[in-house]
Structures are given as C-alpha cells and as structure tokens.
Length: 412
Image 1 (cartoon, rainbow, N blue to C red):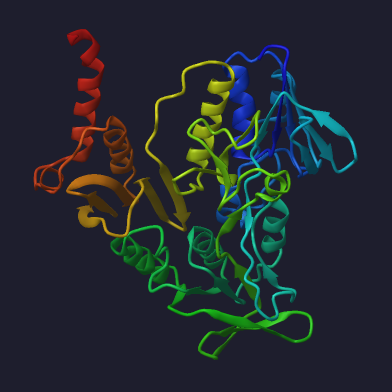
Image 2: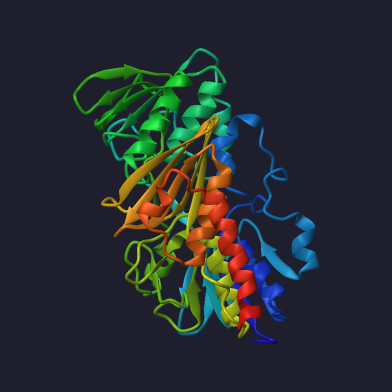
C-alpha cells in the first residue's frame, strides 16, 4: 500500500499499536491517527488502579510525543469523527473537515455501561473511563469518608482497593453471588473476597441497586434492591462497558455487540477494518483486554502490508486489586472443572475442559502464570491427571515444551 493513506480512528492501545506496527512492517504511506481526547494517548489500566497517585499525561503515555513525529504518524488530538462516507472513503470531522482514506481502521474502544436508576445525575457519583474521570475521582478522596462501589468487576474492585488504601471506608455491591462472577472460577473469586476483607472492604452480594438518594444536589446514600439504604459520601459506578459502535452503525456496517469482523478483522464494508474492544469476530465472544487489542493491531498491520500474520497467542488478562496480582491465561467457561494448587503466598486454579487444561487463574503467582501461557500457546494437550499429579511442576513442564520446540527444526 505504498503511497496510500491509512486512517485510524481511536488512539487507545489498539489504535496506537496499529500505527506503530504499520511502520514496523514497512508501510511507507501516510498514517493519520485520530483521537477524540486532547491528552497524549495513554494507558487506561492505571486509571482504576493508580488514580489516587497523581497521574500525569506523560507518566501514563503509550508513547512519548516525539515518537509520532519520528515515525511520521500524524496524531490529531481532540478531533471527533462525526461520520464515515463508506462509498466515498472519507471521514467527516467535528470541524467539518473531510479526510479521505484508502483504508480505515476503527479502534473506537468501548464506553461505560449506564446504570439508569433514579438519582444517577447527583454530584458525587462517578465512573472511570478517561483521564478526566480519574482526576475527578482522586479529588473526591477524603480520609474517613465512605464510598460505595456499584459493580464487582475488575474496575470496581481495583477502585475499591485504591480507595481503601487511602483511608476511605469502602463497600462493594455485587449483583452475583461472588465478585468477578462472570470472569473467574468460584474458587478464585472466594480468594479475592478474602483479600478484600483483609483490606477492610465490605462486600454485599446478590443485590441490585434501586437508585441513589441525595440532599438535593449531592449523593448521600444508595438504595439497594431490597429497599435498604446505605449512606455514603461517594458512589462509583463500574458495571462494565459496551462497545462504541455508534460511528460504524450509522455508516451501515454490521454490528452486534461490537463491530462484526471476519478472521482477518475486515468489516462488512470494503477497506474498513476494526480492532480492539469495539470489534467482535463473527461467531466469537468479544474480548476486552490490552493483550487482545495489541495482538489484533499487529495482525491488521501485517495484513495491510502483505506480511504473514503473527502466531496466535493465548488470551490473557490481569488485574491489580490492592496487593492481589490476579492474572488469567486462556478463556474459562462456566462448565470447566477446576482444581486448585497451593503455592507459597499465592493461589492457582487450573480449569479443565474435556479433561484438558484450558485456562489458568493465578493470584500472586506470576511464574505459574507465565508457564501456563507458554503451555497453552504450545497447543499440546495437558491432561488433568498429569497436571494434578503431586510431582507435577508447571514451570518445569513449560521449559521442557520450549526446549522441545527449539530442537524440532534440527531433528527434521
């Protein structure tokens, strides 16, 4: 595509990596990277983990400002895209300017799911999606005050732990019987609950939120589904995210819980691809993770440059909940058989499907996590009986697989 122009809408992990990978693959045409935010593109995971630490644009930037100039990537900050002219292969920006493209990559990410209950407009109710949200939450911290977290997913638990660390009395409400109920095994979720208790965080499970109470302008309490009232000075809503598909849907692209793409990440419209949190491969679940966004960005860059796609990687995720370093390798399913391992100072849950290792969850056991990713990447089945044997060592097994893989070409 020499001499062509590739436009990337969205400057999160997926968009920035796509621009960088295009240059790595030798693309010599124009690259336009459009961000609706005025800040330098930044890492989003620290927002919920480190919002109280005085985050700055530079400290969490994905790349330094000089990178974009050095790589001849035109970064347009604070520019909203209003419309895609699919037939004419042009974008309409908020300023009215028209920008032509030869190929368009949509990396629009996701947006926070709305709670939609009475009182949600009150001051003192916040959520985290961007750097401005993190600043607002940080400014709300007062030692000894109360905070109520609505939602017990990764973001809610990370925020809860950060607030508790700074002297705030925190309560979490989970709609399911356990926090992280959709994401991890019950065995791992119970370890997280124990960790939250050690942090002084109260967890309420199996309840919904009926609304918020206030004194006219500011929130003073949370009304639970059973009618009870919990007083609070701060409420944080973290009930998940939905893919940002508005631009694609208006342009007539196929959308269904994400912008639908094929295995090559191509959308239903010619010369338009989608990657990251906003995209969903047809027939598959949508993955929200930095690792997935980065991998898809590398894949689309390789395809547009006529290069082989990078080797498939096992999906993996992580979350820092206070001192709990939770990491997952592979995709757990509800019916997986789970076996736990005792490790010094940590927790390991092995998830088996049809008798073979399918996913591994760890808390404060990074060596096991790294080994699990290598084992799952190798694609060689690991049976339950072998993995649960008293003398089985996952790290040693991963090293053996790596040695066998490196020796294979010589044996051929």
